[in-house]
Image (cartoon, rainbow, N blue to C red; front, side, top):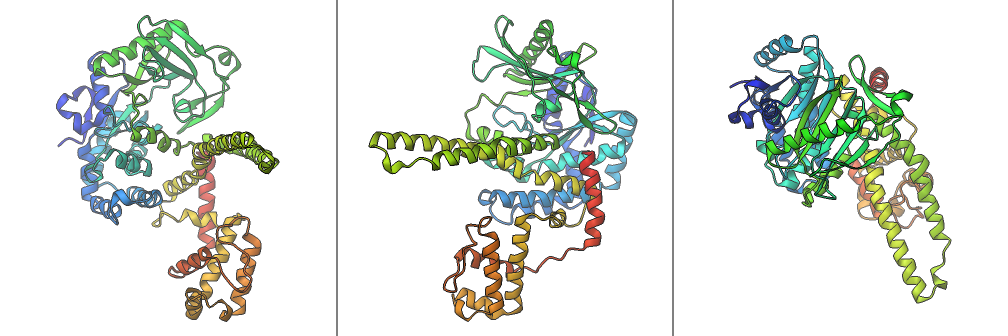
Length: 531
């Protein structure tokens, strides 16, 4: 059993132990492609960790509360959040900690590294998990590397990875994770190469940005794009980007900076470098016998291959198509800030304008032909906004997970949902709405006869104070809670509101300790500003 294996010692028999990403690096290294110095923390180390801490059983307990195939997304997210918090709080066993600390201290004590996932099978053709597991750039110090190894292990159980496994029909009970640790290569230009263009099999695609690849991968920085003929290697087309920003390394993180004007005026690659990058990617394709998605960087005009994996975008498989949406939920802090501006300044005004335009038309006056055209236009409009909702609004709404992740990383609370208390300290309408719902539920807890009257629809016999609270709720939140907040007139209550009140009575009301909240709120503010 080996917990750490250097890249040059990895053989074909180690493939399962080191995962797809690390195995590919070892193959490229043996074939004299230029790759970073790398070691692998094997699946044996992961198995030792979850066995010695009792996490294996706790993970299975979380995922088998009901049939995994029947779990809704929010149930999977709930389980994922709890599992991740277990990894944050459970220390390595003394034996594993000392072994990893000793090896990593010797190799990377004063160096910055990249800590990447390398799950067995994650980069197999047709089952690529590219981007679904976590990677961390510019990690410095042995203690920090050990922490980030656990975070990569935990990402095996992220909601996106679990959903994708379910689509592929993989057995979550046998999932494991190796971790790649690479000395960071601080490139001045980086990019990705697809040896086959999904839209034209006779072409390849190269995308490149200044600085590190992270800005390209998470969508923060728009790349230049070249289309290359596979047979002749000639450039078919080049689409230039605005080139306004680039991602560079800071002290212990990566940061987004304004691109200097002289760099913004020219593409990150010249024609000779486009040729070199594409030929290198074709060498990788020849090694692995399938089209490749290769990540690379130039440092001092030397090309370094960071990783290479099978292309997945050629597949029409349902799971692969959904994988792109799962990936869209994982946004960086910078990306979420830009998305907020887009939603507030572009999408919401455009939606309002579209609604007003449609409201200004009166289909009653249309002929049959005009009515058919109007129906077609409205269907197209509806489908367009549904697509925008899933592509833009849902990922932004899920940005609260980034806040929770930053908070849990810093505070490591026993309750993984503790960060929600901080959100309660805002004046959001939804939180005030929830407070009033809690007040209604509290009334029912104090007077069980109210609950019976609600269930039996005996509204006329209810306490006057309870009725007044219902009226206040409807008055204030009929716009924000239309599905449940309907004006109560003394005769009938909406079923949705009744069900929510009765459900809330089954759970104790949560209390918030303001002192702890204020202290931890300060920690979170520091974390977010430093993110």
